[in-house]
Image (tube, rainbow, N blue to C red; front, side):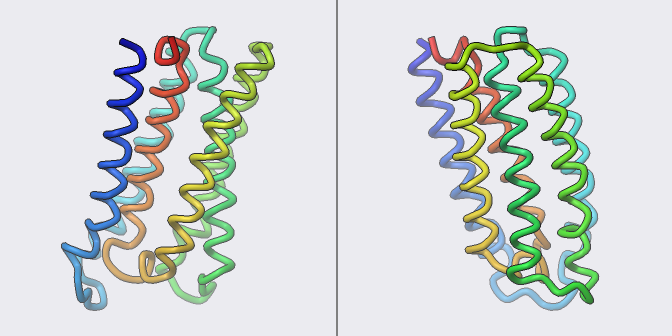
Length: 185
């Protein structure tokens, strides 16, 4: 049963990634300046929803789910670093459209520090630390690659990075689902 749940979760993650990859290309094949600008405002709601999800995960997860907390912490720290890498790779510090790239690393990285500290404070066995670290590093590397491949167009034109933030939520949820002890049997 746990293996079936894990396979189904991975299938949903892959499907969500495919949908998020084609979402901007289908809805905005030739975006004009300021087209669907409201999506840039929704980024902050997605960020708040994600941070609220991290708080709920830290509080509601059982003590045995230290790997999940560690994975989330490493993932969020990696995402903050990926956003900074993206900013330096293609960002323009003079362009207001890149402002989310300037501000997002702080709340995301802060949540990562808290999640990692809580996970490590539970004194988990080495196996849980390694499992959580593996999930976090792989998910963060995936987000970093996504940001760099999509490039500055994803932040300058519709959907203004909205799809990236939704993908971060999906990847974070995948870490919670896949690294929990119940999901691993």
